[in-house]
Length: 88
Image (cartoon, rainbow, N blue to C red; front, side, top):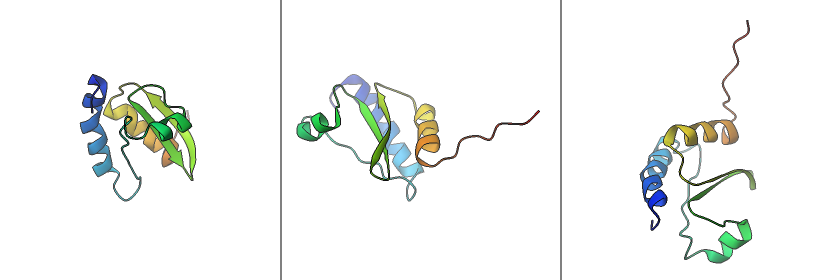
């Protein structure tokens, strides 16, 4: 990681990979090495996290976000584990 937000995000992504092992595939792509892919996906800044489900992009997060935010995104977007709303 070269940018400051990327450096802060890296240990969070590694922790999430461990936490969701076997349920979600987490991959890292270095922007400089994958510029063609980044352009094709419309990545314009770093860090950018793309969330895919069944081969289609479902969510995009640009900039630094904390672990809880990313856990909620994974649960909601990829695992369909939205919290059940309490009925009154």
